[in-house]
Image 1 (cartoon, helix red, strand yellow):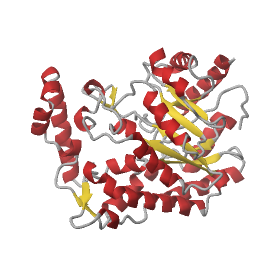
Image 2 (image 1 turned 90 degrees about the horizontal axis):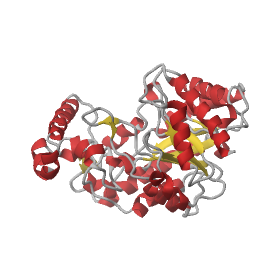
Image 3 (image 1 turned 90 degrees about the vertical axis):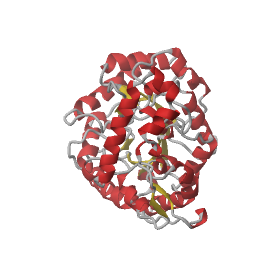
Image 4 (image 1 turned 180 degrees about the horizontal axis):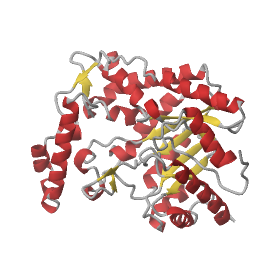
Length: 404
């Protein structure tokens, strides 16, 4: 595999296009393309590992402390009729959005009736006090140890860098629970879920040496609308609007509590996620987009300021943002010297020219950073993996040139 020196580091956020590769094949492909430019290797979330956190769903849905909610999952259960009243001011300006919502609502009900995944579909069982919530094994350790064993096989064969870490993306507690538990019960369920997730990490640490492990927290609270109100024009309609907002310190505090289970010497990464799922009536909009890097800087500073070591922080960059206003808050980023910043400047739609343009804008406000895409690559079509990796590599070399 190549050894790279004249380039900035590369981060793969997690997933790759679904091409039925084994974890070992992913590790070896990424290592062949990137060499030492990549410091942690994800398994690509292929085959039954696809879907990011689906291994945890059954454990939560089967908890004796929770029961199905009596409202549909779509948009926290609001019917199109209720949405028409609650968002009357918006819908007068954008009446087509109600038709979009109604279609989505009907599709979600059909999926639920067919036994498909329901969002915000669980509530605290009647008579169960918050302190009595029970959540058993989440299945994380079982899934991750299979991938890690293939990581070790590849390293022993000399086909991946000897100093690479096994990258394990995990949803933050708030990220996961918002997909399964109704808003008003999340705080009651949170401590039990945190304990269950900490047990999974402790079990993994019995097999994976700290020097091999990188736990990446995927903080999708940004995308899900818990921290700031997205604009109606750039949102998965009203599913994200007017959700209750929670103090940033409360959400970061939850991640820090579970991070205490990560053994000393392991790496911790933060992926501050706005997602890349395409929504909107024209099929081009993300669920939410950041106004600027300000909220992500606040999150990173609170985490880093706690004293918990952070190996890297990843922040997305929307494809159209190459303006000073987006990057200016990076001046207030307070990370330890050893913590790396990765910016999601890589977009296949405008290639290396777009990546360089965004990197040039960012460099006015932050000196050093590695390159990444804005999110995982799992939603890209099969057959595109090598081209996407090649674009990352080209951006890493361009990043070195612009550093000079």
